[in-house]
Image (cartoon, rainbow, N blue to C red; front, top):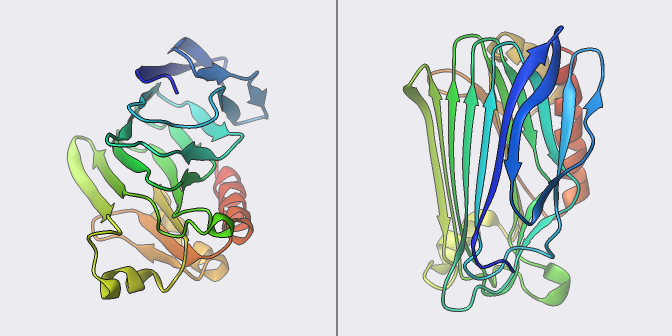
Length: 250
């Protein structure tokens, strides 16, 4: 809709053990709601005044979490990617967590509509003893509108570093018109794909496993949950349950 680069930047810091926004800069369509505080966590809602993401929209999302900050970034509505015609839209995410920072990134799902071409790149740097919960939830079309896998292309690259060492490199690329039928069958007709990455929570693995059957340990460090489904509500409930579990560990 804005056919330009839209920028959102935050620097988070602490005052008297309370996490506050030290610096902020954002351009349309981004907006900030009033922050919500509890005893240990500051929740920040990011609003998007646009109807969705359109051709040649390029979003840049950058957050720096200073030492010992405790923050959750949430959104209020689904992020819809519309027909991008002969072009594409993109989103670049860059998060930096300093020592002992705790950060939750829990946006509402990304919805790919017919002929959408969307590329997302995520880079997260974790310092020692920082904790991260990162959610990536994508829906492959509006089933009620007969748009199941009707998008043009979807690419997502997630790279997470601990003290500048790459510990996660996860890439997904789906191009329905070029994929063979058996490759699309990998999704078993599921249209909802939820990925959650947790870093700094390895010590709670057994406790998490008792409540979340789909959680697994990653090779170097960290935990992940990957689930295919045909409905949002079930996955959103799981996502919120996990958020509360990790919030209680602050």
